[in-house]
Length: 87
Image (cartoon, rainbow, N blue to C red):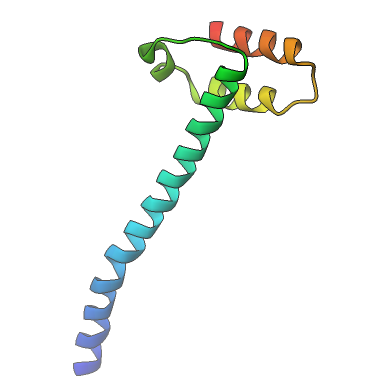
């Protein structure tokens, strides 16, 4: 009986730590994605209002990041990024 209580207590202690660790990893991933998006927009001198930036879809954000890392010329990258923003 003591063993069951010990295991239950350990599970209760470990669960919040695991939950916090998962959220920190997610926050870190989102911060990295946000930084890459901001860099891509800055490289193309694309200015967006904060509201427009918040309304970008995940597909648009992913497309912008992918385009910023493409082997295209800077002008082609920026044109494609502008097209993604307009969609």
